[in-house]
Image (cartoon, rainbow, N blue to C red):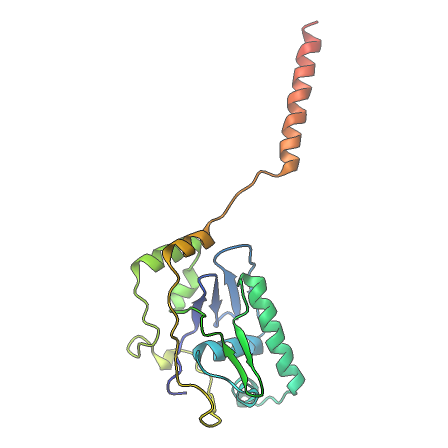
Amino acid sequence: MDDAVLFNGCIINQEIIFNANMNELRPLAGDGECISLNAPTARCLLLLLQNCGKVISRDEFLAAVWETRGVVVSQNTFYQNISLLRKSLVKAGLSEDIIITVRQKGFSVAPNTLVIPLSDEECKNMNRVTLTHYQNNKVVDFISEEKEKPDTHLNLPLIENSSEHGSDLMANKPEEGEKASERLHVTFKIPVWLIALIVVMIVINIIVLVVLNR
């Protein structure tokens, strides 16, 4: 699609990284875990993220994700992949569901979703520490045609089904620095069992000393 934003990886809501080359979701904040997606589920997510602001119909998903590869699947298989995608995003660390169901039309990314495209190298090396540096030092252009190189990126073909789809691209505002810092804050706690063990060892040492001094 001509106005799709092409990339192989991105930061979603400053909480997780999606690496389309590896079909992987990685957490940047909170207690999420690394999730490996199956290929069709990863392509469904990439199609949604590359077309933020648009409603993608079921037929468009089937054509772009499966039929272009010579595979025919049932509607049930498609909906199972969307359900799995939603669960995987939450499990990876997203605090809210970003996939909206548009009744009798299809699916879309929530309008308040922050999607920051990454280069292949940035996607590979991004972690909790480098995220803060990235936010403070790099100006992100969401729709710059000069930065994007279609010949070196994955592009899922999308067949439009008339004018019912919106033409707005990503119009999301970056979260404020304080909010990002709060999300990236990690609290370390000493396990209760370790505290109990230390207390028991201290008591035993005191008893031994008392017995030896008698």
